[in-house]
Amino acid sequence: MPKTVRIYISPKIRTIVEVLMSSIANMMQKFAEHNNLLNFKGTMETIISGVYFHRATKSSPRQPLIYNSGIIIVGQGHKIIHFPEHQIKYGAGDYLVLGVPVPLECEAFTDNDLPVMGIVIDINPVMLHKLVNQIGTNKPFTSGQMSGVQSAKIDGAMEQVTHRLLSVLNNPIEADVFGEDIVKELVYRVLCGPQGHTLIGLAIHDGHYARIARTLSTMHSSYANQITVEGLAEDVNMSVSSFHRAFRQVTFESPLQYLKKVRLAKAKELITSSGSKANEAALKVGYTSPSQFSREFKRHFNKTPSEMLIQLHN
Picture 1 (cartoon, helix red, strand yellow):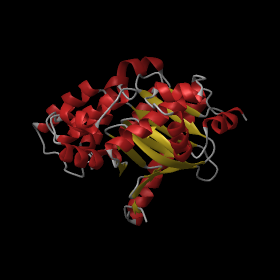
Picture 2 (picture 1 turned 180 degrees about the vertical axis):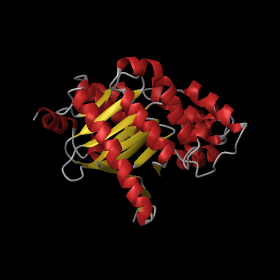
Picture 3 (picture 1 turned 90 degrees about the vertical axis):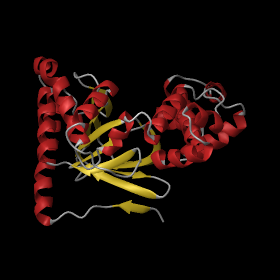
Picture 4 (picture 1 turned 45 degrees about the vertical axis):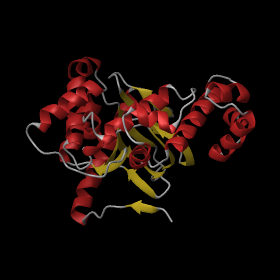
């Protein structure tokens, strides 16, 4: 059975966290009201570049997704991320740190019939490297497991900077003047927090974590090409065995399994958003056998491409 990552929180701390959750949720609700988003479902970019608002009015069943690298702050509702051997549950009062894009299965839940709400912050690589260099000369970083996805509780400093971010999102002038600095402080708070190592490893160029991150970038840009594990390992100057081991530590998947999930996700996007036929989509994402593509698509999404289109249009 997969193990679930859980953290014990004392009743006193739980009360503080509940206040923070309510406060952040209220500010997200005000943002939705101010921007006429009370009927909005999905994810949209805000007036600050690289900052997105997410809202869902209903719970959603477990489904395959690809989470891009970034920071997710939850104001309301909760989600469970399923990996092959463990789960991560995060919700109101938590934030999620993703150092690399990761294919995973996720289910989302509304709480008390209130919508799921959160904000997503992209991480600028130049900003990240500068912050890591600045911080690294003054304090030691926390160490931790080399993996691409980790969750943590929102502390007081993180809550305050989240408040400021949500506040300026309703004011275009303040967003323009302060937005970039607030995002920079938010990334700084994450770097100094319990899961900071999830991002810090990206700035250490010779480390295995950064090498796997470069590999993932290659896989996401060249997924339609013929890709071999030997070629990927050679590109980052690692032996095949070391590469396999490091890749699984970061993504919880083997390289070929990861590549398959990327291709299937891209094919789904082509079919549902661009109107491509299933056979066309298969060829565009790197499959040479339409029948193999159909089998793997059905196994991965639990629907055939045609069934997915019917559901989409109903």
